Image (tube, rainbow, N blue to C red):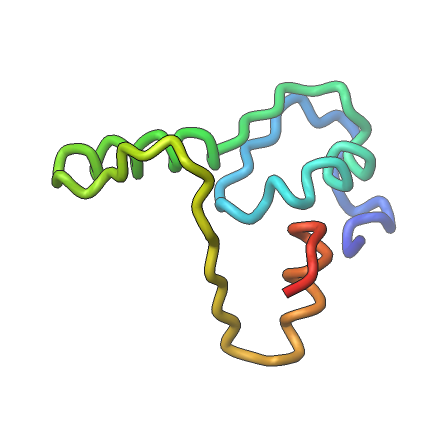
Amino acid sequence: RKYEDGSIPTAVDSVVLGCTHFPFASESIKRVLGYPFNFYDGAYGTSRETKRRLKEAGLLNPSTETGTVELHFSKEESLPIGEMLLSQPF
């Protein structure tokens, strides 16, 4: 939203999402920057590398059963943001 005032370049040819939480904002980024352009999502590579390292350390859970996710927030006021991003209540 900060850049909607026109202070970004008018001809964007590539965007690299360099943080694992950026995919949550990918649609907004595409809209603001005027998709189509080359779009590189770093989260996929990060998750693939995490899996490789867990496997290498013998820590990868081989189960195919649905697991659980436990989230921790440093600030209680961050909870609604997490619920919105993950589309589920906590």
